[in-house]
Length: 154
View (cartoon, rainbow, N blue to C red):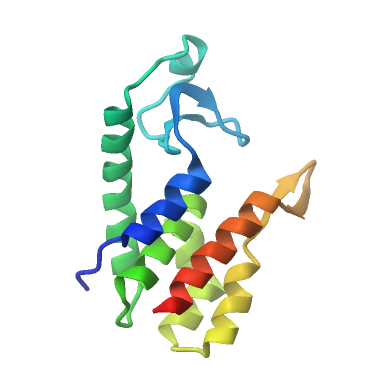
């Protein structure tokens, strides 16, 4: 599979992640910078408010996207359009390749399930733990709907 993340998928990722040019702790207390980049950020970076430029944020996003594109390409066994591929890359970028690899969503996509079944499975991933309870979050609901809308657009 030689898919790339489509421009529409990239817009979803950028809008959902937001871009912060100073290191911070995300809601899960993970040191983060740019568009949700975590790999090279430390607690010390957060404490000193390490800054990056917009160009650096874009570069880190491109590196992160390449990793998720590789992972999605490895996991998906059926042909996809760039929009479908990009929608799954956005999903994995947010939840991780591990979550995607063990998900009923991936099984449905690889099994060529009807789009309504894929949609039900996709849209269920709008929750996060709040005080120990899985709770739908508005931002995740919006992101999952945008991703699925892009996926079903073909």
